[in-house]
Length: 296
Ligand SMILES: Cc1cc2nc3c(=O)[nH]c(=O)nc-3n(C[C@H](O)[C@H](O)[C@H](O)COP(=O)(O)O)c2cc1C
Image (tube, rainbow, N blue to C red; front, side, top):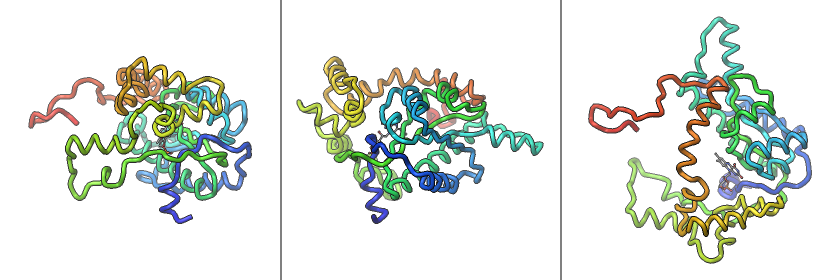
């Protein structure tokens, strides 16, 4: 398939055939990851391959009971790895303070996602499907225990892979002209902005199942693979919260804003326990700059 077509038709796959990924293909994916771009070419990443059924099940539970992590034949856990870099520096008689530097952290996370996305694209090209599972970010401690990660190694993304048993269709996206700007940022009019999201998600009408097929495909797929009634529970919460539009659905039901902000504390604690602390990177109010603008 032409690469443009492959990339514009790619969709996250959460339903896999019961068929292993060949070692040779897995090695190709890992080679591609090893050759991904990297800030300063430092490559502070490690990828833990999880294939044993009981460990896949434990990982699935850790990341919020996501059945595709259990059912996919392989999951790659992408970790930010300052353990290896730090030890190398130390053995070379050099100080490395990556675990204290937000800049190293952000560049390292960008590296990690470059590697993960490189794998995603090659996997797609080779007939596999994949899905990212980012909830591991909030479960780094149990994931680290499962994978026996040393201090300085932080598991920040799971990519579950396998041969697709089905692929979702009709997943909505914002079009090119909404996300791109010509030379300068174009601030859209309120009505255009709202219309773009309405066009993306469509209305929440009486047919909530149809809406979920577009906007909450995870619960639809989870229901197919799990005995719990995720869709019914989500529907119940929609009624309880009186969800009427997609923004409300996203920011009140799926990602309640208080909960997301409260996670800061938890992440700070978990990251700290893994050796990542950022002195001076305050979570409080920042002073205005000398033109009176709040820090941004
Ligand atoms: C950072 C990130 C985290 C994600 N986490 C999850 C996850 O925890 N579970 C899941 O089923 N999908 C997850 N996804 C997949 C998204 O749900 C998916 O990309 C999105 O719905 C768009 O669909 P598409 O990939 O088919 O285009 C994640 C994707 C990204 C980029």
